[in-house]
Amino acid sequence: MRVKKFEAKTMKDALKMVKSELGPDAVILGARENKKSFGLGGETSFEVTAAVSDITLQKKRFVESRMRPDDREKFRSSQARSQKEMIEKIVERREQQQRSAREQADRNANPRPITSVSYIDIPDDQPVYARRQGIQGGLEFVQESYGRGSVQRQSASAPAQRPQTAAERAAEPRPADVRNKIRSLAKEAWEAGRATEVAPAPKRQVASQAPATAAATTEIESLKGEIQRLQSILNGFTQVPQSFQQAASNAPVHAATYPGAEYGLSYDFSSIFQKLVETGVSAELAAEVGLRAQSEIDPMQAKKKAIVEAWVAKWFLQNVSVCERPFSARFQVFTGPMGSGKTSQLVKAASQLIIRDRKKIAIVSTDTSKVGAVDQLKIYCQILNVPFAIVRGPEDWRWLESHLAAVDHVLVDMPGLGLKEADEISRLRALMPSHEQSQVHVCLSSSMKESDALDAVRRFRVTQPTDLIFTGLDLSVNHGVIATVQVRSGLPLHSFGVGPRVPEDFEAATKERVLDLLFKLSSLKRSTEK
Image 1 (tube, rainbow, N blue to C red):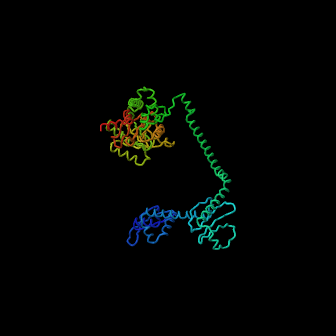
Image 2: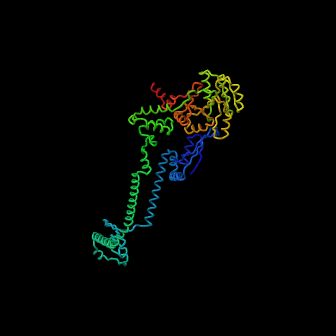
Image 3: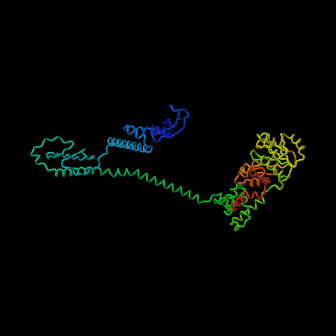
């Protein structure tokens, strides 16, 4: 591989240099503009790094070496496609010449034996040589010379004869008779050569056919083995596995590939199963609901999609639980992992209590580790004109409770912790209010995966949570995780955060709203109205 850099005033000139130096097959590895001055005018330059293989470069140089100087300049200034076609044509012609020369050298080194004689009409003024290999007695040849009408037949081992006299030459036969005699002699030599090859010919034919017959036999045997192997595979497919036979004795085997078949759902309930899974409901919960519907709905009614969807909607309305009194306790504690939207939801809830319910509230922050968390809440408290306090330990709570006796609700912002270590759990417990009248909300993002959300609920069980809050509904497309986490955890839903606006984007949780999120009824209604 040859790698070279080219520098010119313009990119076009640099690429032209690449093509002229390395040929049309050069690969551009990089190009950049140099900020340093170029020449006397202070202009910038362009630097191009190109590469080409050694073989390709040798072909180009070979083609240029066979050109005249004028043709070489025209070749370098021509288009890349034309250069490439010319290089390939000249190189291919050179390789063909080399192959022909090698074949001619091989023929000269190993001449083929003469195995036949052709009979050709010979002009009267030309000599004729008839040769035959394999004739008993060595090589014999017949030479005919015309000049003064003399014919001479000579063997390779015959002694030299004296010159003929004029009378003898007059008695010689004519050229036509000589040709006939030569042909007869050549034919006799040909028949004699065939007689020597008749006996061993069948042996050579048998010897040449023996390897071919053995190869054909081997190929037939291999084909038979391959057919037997394929037959055994087909027989294996036709047999029912033992596991399927055992399952058939207990429950029907669902070998279909439609959605929900692996859970035992029939085809009539595959559409509702797929719809629930696409909205974010876990496959296990969707299969559980589908099997329950399959056992209770009449098989004839199950053919109707609307009846199946109505039954599933009714199931969610009956099994999803929400808080009947969202702010029944005096202390409202907002917990959850970092980034779940606790602080925003706390401010929205405080605005709802002040504006809608006309309550007196106070806001307390325990998150002293997050940068800007205390300042953010302090600004919101100034806007809402409510008291604000910071708690750094259990002793602060005892002093604070005596000074907040006049407020109706105390909203507490807890730090966002992962609770994967014992130190974090101890710290969170120490910052929790000791008052018995407390509601602990676990804030989760609706964009979380089902496994992550359930794991967060499990870890925050140490705070004895009373309900769930899901935030960021506007950032998520599928909201099935809300129903899945609520059903699996057993904690009721408290409220939703549907956007960034304060206090408009606060929404109390209802069963109808959960059903709306699952079946997207609001979007369907809006599209119908439009």
